[in-house]
Image (cartoon, rainbow, N blue to C red; front, side):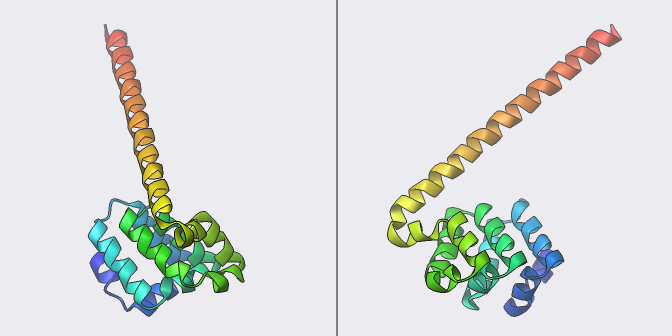
Length: 154
């Protein structure tokens, strides 16, 4: 399904990203465990049509861009940031564009790219550590429940 969905023309995908329902489909895909290569292929496809910029100006598209950014690899984030940094002045004139610029820290990318990359890497590490802690807590809770059930059975 996903491969046929993303085989659509880039302009169609951009319009889907600007649609309330279509943007949610794209967001869900980026939040899933979809293959990174497919995600990068999608981003490359819409960047070629200046789609990241176009989506950033739209109510639903801007949320889509932020979700893509938040759930992508560092390379993909850098590609998105590079695309957006070329249009900072235009994005600054848009309500939704300003939000994307702020949340993705595009000005930082434009002025201090290495520091921006380091900050993104640190953020990813913190998220991974937090996920690990949550998984450990879930496992502990499961063990407690199993022990309680065994005690009830005895």
